[in-house]
Amino acid sequence: MTLTNFELPEVRGRLTEGRSLSELTWLRVGGPADVLFQPADLADLQAFLRALPAEVEVFPMGVGSNLIVRDGGIRAVVVRLGRGFNQIEIEGDTVTAGAAALDAHVARKAADAGLDLTFLRTIPGSIGGAVRMNAGCYGSYTADVFQSAAVVTREGEVQELKAEDLQFAYRQTKFPEGAVLVSATFKAPEGAPEALHARMEEQLRKRDETQPVKDRSAGSTFRNPAGYSSTGQAGDVHDLKAWKVIDDAGLRGARLGGAQMSEKHPNFLINTGDATAADLEGLGEKVRETVRKASGITLQWEIMRVGDPLPEAAQD
Image (tube, rainbow, N blue to C red; front, side):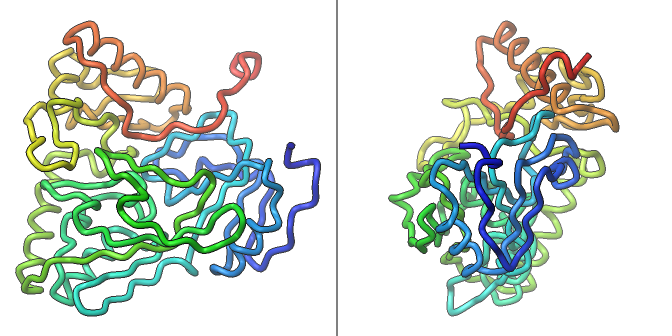
């Protein structure tokens, strides 16, 4: 079923047909969504999904910090959560955050309360993406502090998921098809607020020294090679990094159209100003092939790539 075959359900939030997604992603590329839905609140989201025909695909989208939307756009209803889903609540040693709450805001508010979620401070994006991708840095992962998540199913029901449901792994989880994550609860270690804020400031300083934070990127492009890097499981920590094998293959600063592997950090794919999604994904695939030939290592994408490419005739 296509989205032109039925009337969209009435909502209290915002429905926009043919909405370009380029301005909603950090890389600033991508074609339109068939429909973009920005629900007013939880009840609005539930009613919409309940009324939406099961054949229509739903794609939940966060703040677009880890995403390439291809130039032909997405044949689906894209659900993007906003203000009704960005609350942060703290009780004892638990932090419950809406899926749209920014990772950095959660880290800071937790630190104010003497709770250590400092690893989230330098991770771009929102809590929904952090859970779905088991985001982590400095040796800590979302899975380490995760307690539960609330999702809305395609039937419009709120369902609680535990760690065993998500099957956390390195930079990935398993989610019910089409479900929209709306909040997550974490149990955080305690710490002195002053020390936690000082640690985050130091992390920011190190990030700014080593990463192209002023360029248009989506964070790390490729996962650290499996078998050489932490999967988030105890005892599985090694030192080889994706940036190192990219650098060793001579790809620091490599370009394709308006896309470039950063000179500052070669595992960061950047839009120099006029890149298309095809440029970015094409350069990424060129890097993967060159690294495979040079080292025998097949890099795995960390950035999600979704949607359709432009038809060849439209690219000419």
